[in-house]
Length: 139
Length: 139
DNA sequence: GCTAACATTGCAATAGCATTGCATCGTCAT
DNA sequence: ATGACGATGCAATGCTATTGCAATGTTAGC
Ligand SMILES: [Mn+2]
Ligand SMILES: [Mn+2]
Ligand SMILES: [Zn+2]
Ligand SMILES: [Zn+2]
Image 1 (cartoon, helix red, strand yellow):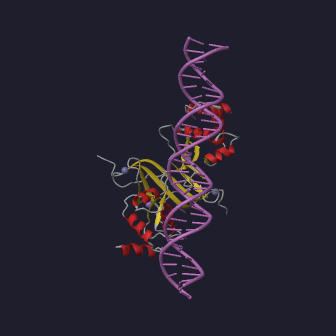
Image 2: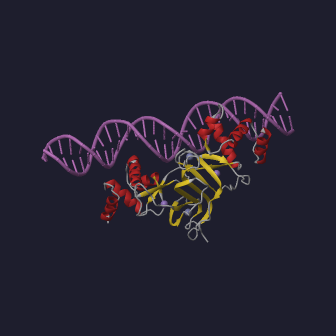
């Protein structure tokens, strides 16, 4: 089990330290994207900056992607398997729930092709939809 | 001309003070969205906080909309006419140029309908596309 | 085993942007 | 005139992101 986590790190060319194993383990248990604050609170006592750099390393290596959901705090979530450091392939929609304040990846909801005006060239896309999530939507 | 600016404020139920006339005049001259810093630099000597609150007032009244382009600094641009304080109708794409670092409204490029998973309900959408803008795209 | 090179971690400090409190000032109606 | 109310200016604060540097841990060569 911890071997599985360890392999996931090695596959992404990340040195599997104790801290990184713990962070990746924590990330796999999340249903929503998490902020650095969330990570700090969810982990045992650990240094905030180290956690910050751990997330940065994970992002560089294509293990997680970051999400700017407009709350001011960057959120992080695990990538799909085919991501690498240079190219993230997480062109899915992100959903921010105005009720529970959680940010979710919607990996099955892709961002559609957008036809831009002449001579505009797309390199990245980021679509945030805000509203009410399935859990908060009663009735 | 300043009468025109004044009317635009009054139409949005904004008290047309000297500062607000100047800010709106400045905004109408912009081709790209601007940050609070841009506004501060572009205006004559004026208090940063007052400019901040002016932008906030404009946003509340539906005169401008804010754009989170991922740079960390909120950008502002004039709304389309049919916006009001409660509902902004600027569901257009925003484009951030990785070369010139400017953020543009693409008012003719609307965000398409997105079919979300069951029981997710949309209230707002925000699509940022990053790449190379028309001006920076040579050849 | 010892040691040098290298990566990781912990702690301190800083930078930037957003936001609020409060006192002052201007304007308008009575 | 004056009192109410909104607008402005200035100070202070909070929060997130980011870097510098020292201490620590890890690994490979000797
Ligand atoms: Mn995602
Ligand atoms: Mn816009
Ligand atoms: Zn929710
Ligand atoms: Zn450009």
